[in-house]
Image 1: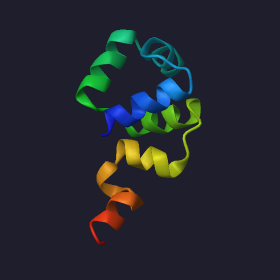
Image 2: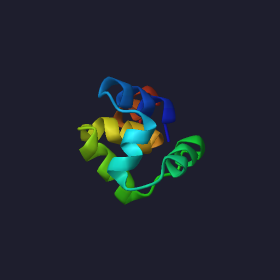
Image 3: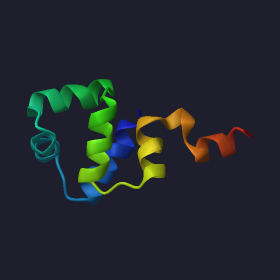
Image 4: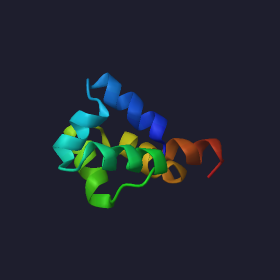
Length: 77
């Protein structure tokens, strides 16, 4: 997971960890831990995409960085 990219999108959209946690229905501490460890469930990833209005390609770059089309281009796949 690309935590830095997610945090960058959060800043662009005017969200902080506490706000996003509230929208996800989780505690701020849980949000901190999930960001620290880079672990979100599929449902949460999709919901984050909806909340932050993240396009599908960017969502893949954030949550599945090894699977992103941009990554495959640079690896010659």
